[in-house]
Length: 119
Image (cartoon, rainbow, N blue to C red):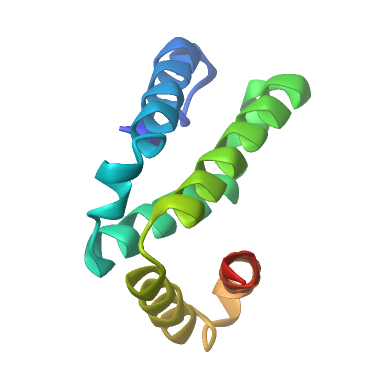
C-alpha cells in the first residue's frame, strides 16, 4: 500500500495515513518484538526501496523531505524495537543479495547504515 501511495502526489493523504499507521504499529514494542526474520526482511526492503524511490521528487522538495524524514523515523523504530538476532539476519541476507548487483549499490549502502544502527 505504501508503494502505491508514493507513486502520485494526488495520493498524498493516503500516503500520510499509511505512514502514520506504520509509525503507530512500530511503536507497539510487543508487536514489533514478535516479528520474525522473514517479516523484518520484507519491511526493511520495502522501507529502503521507498527511501530510494525517485517518485518522491514528484511530491515537491518540501513534501518529499518530510516523507523521507518519516520513512527514516519508521526505519529507526523498526530497528530499535525488532528482535536483534532476526533483524541482523534479515539485514545480512539483504546485503548478501544486493551487494553484488551494481544497480543495487545505493540500497546496499542503506543496509550497511541499518547494520551500523544496530550497534
